[in-house]
Length: 348
Image (cartoon, rainbow, N blue to C red; front, side):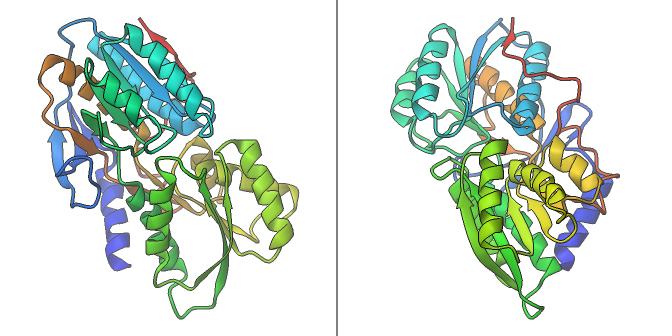
């Protein structure tokens, strides 16, 4: 526990994941395997592309501000490098066929593909085929490595473990039992199984009793319905833990039911909504994986792959826990798009 809080204090002093013209990242060896130990590196992003490359990027959705922040990072770096960027989004994790069709169409006029997948291996045959004539870069969500040239991401096992361990510091083993409702996300998505594994690992040594598990897409209405069902089944729950959208919906629902402050809320990733809720004391904590920076890195990797200068094939920002104690001192510019930014689908 002391190590965790010491790390948080250090991150409060060090701030963002960039310094000047370099990015502070963690690089994974062997690449595409999160079971190893990452190495901290200083990554030098490109200043300008050699050509006006065309990049296609596919997202699971743009229904929450997490992927809007990824979008902002991609758009900002594409504009800096002078490359074209076309964005398609599948509308949600159940829409594998739609994402497959969108990628096939978008890739026809692209030099490189960046994919945030809705499924760990559902796109594999298509991506293997596309990789024969263009670099394919994985962004954010974990994916089968077949056909993948590079990956911008963090270990979602570590994301789940981070919030689980944080919870354990609040309720260590031997303290009174507390009841948790756990909302992992959509079954089959490329990140959910890993979050689940890490969260369970992080809770080891806590006094938690998981009384309800609800799986579902990370849309606000989907999560709100799951939360309502859970509260009918377990009105005596002490904590709700799940995605950032789960946390947003929980804050709204608890307010409507006059339960604010009676049930604690934690998120397993960080968005604009969780930022505001932590500031207001409505959400206790969330880990950030700096989605803005991940978006930038994926574009940089795509251009490097096209120009033959790709050496860092798997990297991502260090995970940071954000709570009420450090939210006012941490630099979160690598985590959240500016409030004025709107989803952007084309950079010419």
